[in-house]
Image 1: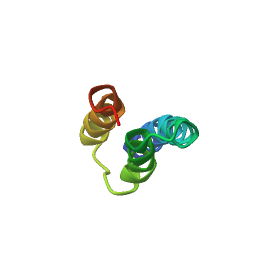
Image 2 (image 1 turned 30 degrees about the vertical axis):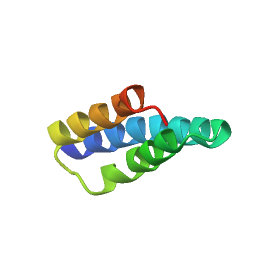
Image 3 (image 1 turned 120 degrees about the vertical axis):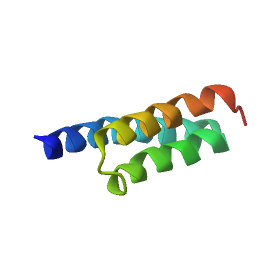
Image 4 (image 1 turned 60 degrees about the vertical axis):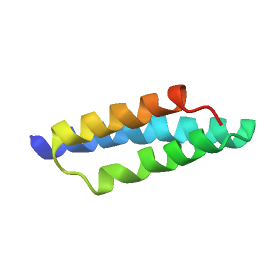
Length: 68
């Protein structure tokens, strides 16, 4: 059951990352592009559900504090 949760959370944060990447590329903003790539890549390296959610939420709110 844990593997299914990791897969679903990874897919969720990956889709948010794709949205950030497309938005940053269209608006020519560097922070959303890097956050988008990070959100799409980090689920491959973290298998703990709690850490996956914490890092995903932290990366998701990061562009709201760093505007470039």
